[in-house]
Image (cartoon, rainbow, N blue to C red; front, side, top):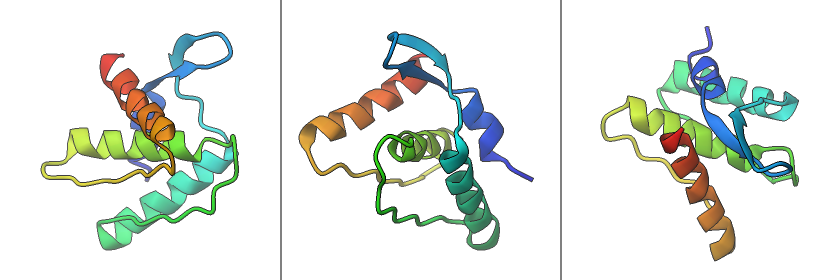
Length: 102
């Protein structure tokens, strides 16, 4: 039974096209990745995902959403989402701010 999916669907993200804060719309790639993460948590109590990242399918957004959700639910949770440039790192951090503020 999925635990993270309903929680992540309640998060809000900033829709870049119209700059509105909207509910998190999971796409096919995010659902597949989330299913993999859920399976790992169920069997090992942790998840490690390395993605050779395709552009614009929401991998970074989902990674940030999972990390944010776990950090708010679990004591002493440690998570890491990396970007290869400072602007990307700032963007990832801004996602968590949006999740928290909304």
